[in-house]
Length: 492
Image 1 (cartoon, helix red, strand yellow):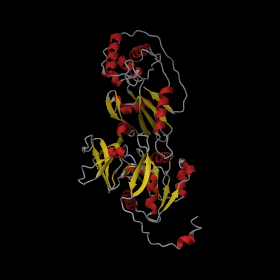
Image 2 (tube, helix red, strand yellow):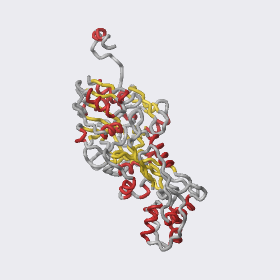
Image 3 (cartoon, one colour):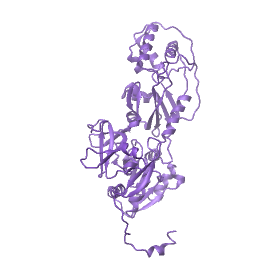
Image 4 (cartoon, helix red, strand yellow):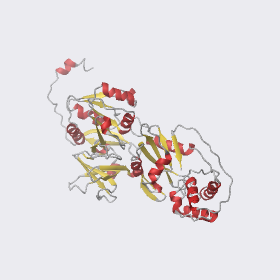
């Protein structure tokens, strides 16, 4: 169409049109569900978009010769970032064909064929790309990622700069960024952009020291007006800025938990609504994911929390399930991962089940599909292999646990079921240890049940403590293994 209209276009004036716009005029409204699941229209003014464009021009030294990819759906705010910085510099934007948007092999070939010099990919898609052995083709000088927690990758192996970005839609797409290095552990999300103010605050909206976890608040020129037609939501999330000293300034409460590192970068911990209570103790799922990310054989890891079935007293607790993907050429062992976690975390933070996946499920936008992850965790619980007691000692422990945890149900307890994941708590743990001491004449301390919370582990602890009397009990179960599409899992 443009070729056919070339003559008409050539006759048009080349001077900028007179458009009475100010930085406060609206640039776009983008709907996002965030963590609530209810769509909210985020109104971003020209000021926020202009600052994003200006920063990108200088940060990545754009020229008219640059060729950028455009992969994100228009419902994803990253599309704004993929288009305007390049078009306003006279560079070209190349649309990724729909058929290859999630085909990592084809996408890698397309980036080379289109001679792309700068590319943004959602984090999960980028990780799948380099897990397949992809290397950046020239002239790709930087791969920009964002949208999810980034896991470690060796930039030298990648063949181009790797830059991690973070930002909510409410702060004009990008709020922080940092170049990824080969340091161990999960990469940080960098530092705030020059026009963005970032604060790590406690529940009283006071700054916290370096290394202390707090909620990230964002201010500055990138902030949205608020939510269209949702004054209550706007007032809840966009609060007065009492730290900058500027009259009328506001801060956006991201709901994300972070902490400042000693080098001035921000470390992402997890969502504020990702905080769960396990055995009466509040924990951050992101803390567990961060430790899993330090495992040399784990490429990706996500921890989900699910309520347990009610115990005998009607008590419900939370069970943790870790879903992990192995690095290329590695085979993960659930028990090895648990041991790795136990050396670094308290027992109540060690997931009761480890599920090994071939890859993480993604949404159409290339981000982690958390609804699918929850479904996989539930499937693991309902379809995992039941393994009954193998020895008289294990059988007697099953009887004790059954009476304490499931007195009114015939559902059997397996030797790899976790006492606390089944609804146990400190009071029931005390009763359980007392029953063991009384029945088996063994001096078993209460802490043993916290460090050995499965039948199999508890039996080993009792044997090490030297039980003198074990009343034989009939085996009440057999091995029942079922096939399912998860690569592998192990409870306990």
